[in-house]
Length: 364
Ligand SMILES: Nc1nc2c(ncn2[C@@H]2O[C@H](COP(=O)(O)OP(=O)(O)OP(=O)(O)O)[C@@H](O)[C@H]2O)c(=O)[nH]1
Ligand SMILES: [Mg+2]
Image 1: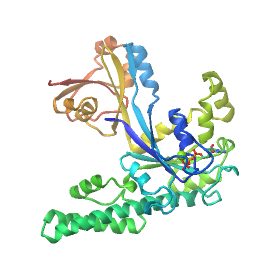
Image 2: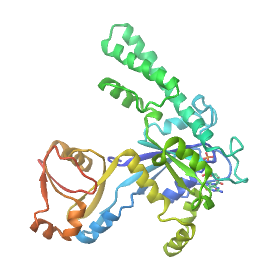
Image 3: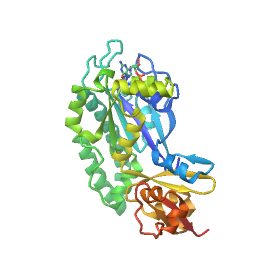
Image 4: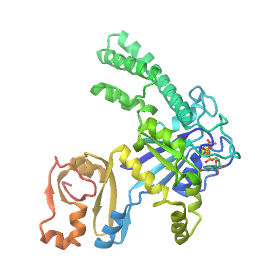
C-alpha cells in the first residue's frame, strides 16, 4: 500500500509473535502453545490511531475520515540455523525482506506451559540468536551478489568494479557481526543496498513480551534489553493481555487497563514507538468527501508529500496551502483560519511538519 508502513514480526518460536499479531489486527490467527504454529505469513492492516484526525473530523465534518494504516506481517519463528533452512528456514526470511521495519518479539515472560527452544528465559541471548540469523542470511545474499558482480568486473565493467569494492566492504562488516544499517556508502552503494533488501538494514524495535505482573513493576529482562539497546528501541508489552483486552467491551477494557496500570492499549504505544524509531510523521488532507491522514518520513518536502497522495501530484506540484494542526484547531474552523491569515502558501522547498494540514495546488 503506497505510503503506508509495513512491519514484519520476527522472533524465536513461542516468543508470542502471533499473539501480538492477533492483538494488533484482531484477525484471530491461531496462537497455540507449540512451536511453528504459523506456517504461512499473515498480513494484517491496522488503522493508526490518531486523536488529531478525530479532532479534524469533528471540525471539518466531512462524510468520512480515513486514518493512515500500518501493515503487519506475522511470520513463523526463526531458530538458530534458519538461514541454512533449519526450522522452517529461509522461506520465512524471504517473507520479511520487503518490510520497512522489524518488530522483534523477545520472550521475557515465564510460563512453564509454554516451551522455550532453549528451555530458559534469557532475552539478551535470544536477541543475539535472531540477530545472528538475520546477519547470516544477509551475508549469504551479499556473497551471492558478489559472485555475480565479480564476473562482470573481470570483464572490465567499471561500475561492476566499484560495486565489488562496496560488496566486499559490506561482506566484511556483516562477517564481523555488524548490521548492514550504518555502512558507509556513496550513491552507488546506497543503490546496491536498496536493491538487496537486507534484513539487518531495517530498523528494528524490540518488543519485550513480559508477564502481566511485570507491566507495572520492574522486569530484569527488560532492564537488560534497555541497557544494551537503549530505551527508545525497547517497548515492553504483555502480548497475551493485549490480546485479551480485545475480547472486552470498551468500558470493561478501560477498567482493566487502569487495574493493571496501562495508560493506553499496546497498539497505540507500539505505533507511536515505530513512528519515532522510523522517523515518520503524519500530515492531513481534506476535501468535501473526507479528511485523511498520511505518513511520510520526517524531512519530506511538500512535493514528496503530494506524491504520497497521488503520484501525479508530485510531478504537477505547484504549491501547498498549509496550516499547522495547532493553528487550525485554535482557529476552530476553516473560515476563521482564513480570516486570520493562518493559511500559508508553501512551495517546492517546504519541509512538511508533523500534523500539517495540506491542500495541494497541482497542474493536471
Ligand atoms: N504467559 C504468557 N504466555 C504468553 C504470552 N504471550 C504469548 N504467550 C503464549 O505463548 C504461546 C506461544 O505464543 P504464539 O503467539 O503462538 O508464539 P509465536 O511466536 O507466534 O510462535 P511460533 O509461531 O510457533 O513461532 C501461546 O500459548 C501464547 O498464549 C504472555 O505474555 N504471557
Ligand atoms: Mg506464530
